[in-house]
Image (cartoon, rainbow, N blue to C red; front, side, top):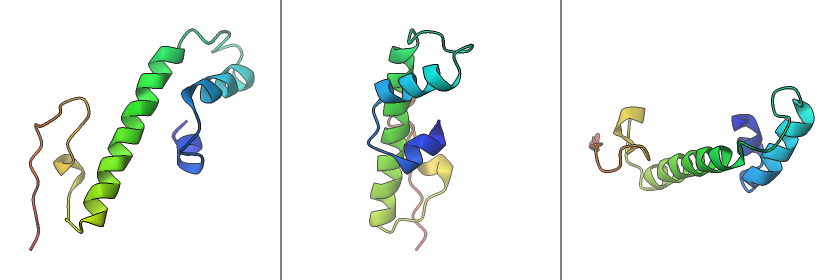
Length: 81
């Protein structure tokens, strides 16, 4: 899934669900998990946007420094000078 998002970052969650249903019909016989997938895709995109912003500002971060979408505002930023 993450590989699909990395190669096609603009793909919709609905299109991803259709692929899953087609490639794994035994696991995903219907698109009942679409809303869950939409939330996961949104979280993935939010994390990647944060990384891009921090990389563009040339701030040296560790993965624990990047605020999580699950816990907004809880991370602190360490700036290596």
